[in-house]
Structures are given as C-alpha cells and as structure tokens.
Image 1: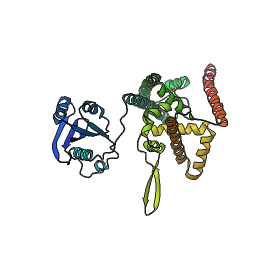
Image 2: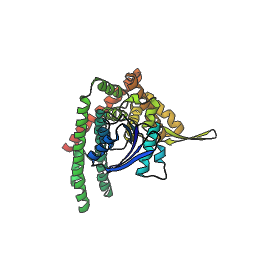
Image 3: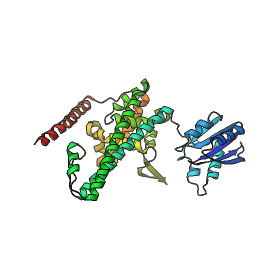
Image 4: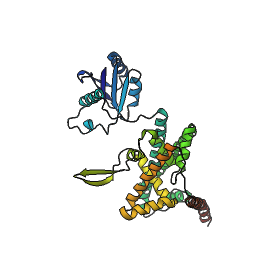
Length: 366
C-alpha cells in the first residue's frame, strides 16, 4: 500500500508518496491545470490512499482521485497542529507530514458536504454577501450626508429617495452620491435575485429537508432567512456527537486555560462558521424580544456578566436547542403564555409596518 500526502494550493499541488514504513518513495509537484498529468501519475501508483486538507478548492481533486484510491481522508486543517504550528514549513514538508500521518492512521477528519449541501451553502452565503453589500453602500451614503448634516431616517424609502435627489451637497459629493445610489439599486436587485433563488432551492427539497425547515422555524427568533443559514451551515446534524459540539463549530463556546488546578475562562473562540455565529446572535436578539422565556435567560446572565456576554449565551443555548430538535425530529414547544406573547408582538409589528406607507402618503399629500 502506498500513502500519498497532498498539499493543495490554487495554482500548484505538491505530492509525497510513502510506504507503510514511512519511507519516502517519490515526490512530485504539478500545476493544477495539468489535470491529465496528475491523473496519470496516480494511475501509475497502483494501490494507494491519499490525504488532502479541507481547503477552499479541494473538491475537484477529490472527484478526480476518489475513483482511483482505495481510501482517502479529508483532513481538518485546524486540528492538524503539526503543520499549522510548524516553524519549518514548506509545501514539500507539509505533503510529507500528511503522508506519514496517513500511514499511521492518525489524521483528524473534516466533514465533506454532499453536493446538495454545497449548493445550499453557496446560495446562503451569497445571499449574506449581497445583504452585506447593501448595508455597506447604505453606510457610505449616510456618511456623505452626515458630513452636511443631511442624514434622515427612512432614507431609502420613497420619501427618502426624494430627499436624496434634492439635498444640497458639493459637486464632488453629488457625483459620489449618484454613483452610490446606482450601486445600491444594483445590490438590492442582486439581493432580491439571491433570495428568490434560495427560496426556489428550499422548495425543491425532499420531505425530510422540509421537515427540518419547519422544526427550525418553530423556535422563537428564527425566521426563514436565519433558518436557511442554520441548515446550510450545520448540514447533517448527526455529524455532531454532542449538541455542545455544534456550539463549538459555531465558535460560540468560551476558551479555557487551566494550570495547577486553576481554570481561567476566556472569550468565545470565534472559530468555525462566522456566518452561523452571526445568524445565531441575530436570532437570539429576536428571541429575547418576542419570548418571555428567552428574555428571562438573557436578563439572568446580563446581571452577572453584562449584555454582550448575555446575548452570546442566549445564541449558544438557542443553537443547542435547534440541534437537539433536529436530532429528535420534534418541533419547538412553547408554553401558552409565551405563544400568546409571540402572537401579540407579531401582530403589533405587522400593524406598525402597515401604518408606515399610510403615514408617508398623508405627509406627501400635505
């Protein structure tokens, strides 16, 4: 049996082949565009296993080599500390370390999403980027107006756009403002298209997938957008041995340092999915706002640790609840008082939203 360690980059690929005794048999380096040469090299190896780190561009290589290999390992780069913390680091040495640990059977595995899970993540992450672009452009527009004390609430509604068209600014600011408004409209179009595509993707899911969406959205604070992010980033919840492992995956668990019997709690690790962490914090704020149960949790932690740590604690607990529900297949069960409060606040929110256009029309008529 031959064991191949692969150090993959965007433009190059370094290979190291060892045997069961970890003696180096061959080293090669290819350009990633030489797909035919890469495949021919592995065909000539005969019986082999390979290991590659879970970088952003590993999928094409796995699809190429998986039919040829007897076994392969997708390596978790964050847990491969021998490579990550090495002071003597090169592509040649990294490939050799991967090959040696593959021969020993001691490589930390990473999760490989299914093709549908990859599509889901692509759409959810792209929509989040579109939302960020809209926010970024709006902040720049408000910054320009704030320089002339011309910033206003509801700036991007019909009334706000009239204000933007007539506000007195310098010639240079007017040019930049007009360009930013064009960029804003384009970003809004992209956001609308991404949202539409994500909804179509969700509608095409099987019964199990639709049931998962129902379970997630049954929890307080979790709407359709947050649900798509949670399901896309978590993928198969059965890969988490414990529900707390999901919190660690989102980077919502605190770090710890212990020595001589003393343990010091640090801030949250912020490792793992940044988008999932953001989504859970947003859901936590909504849960605190609309649910008496979660608001009580927030207030209890806030008195001891402050508001910022309290909302992170709520986000972590809410994620644990969601993963538990997905594992069990049960819906979130709110008590009667909590359910009535959610309905009351949701009706008040919708009524307030419906009154806004009427106020704007009445003001324009005057």
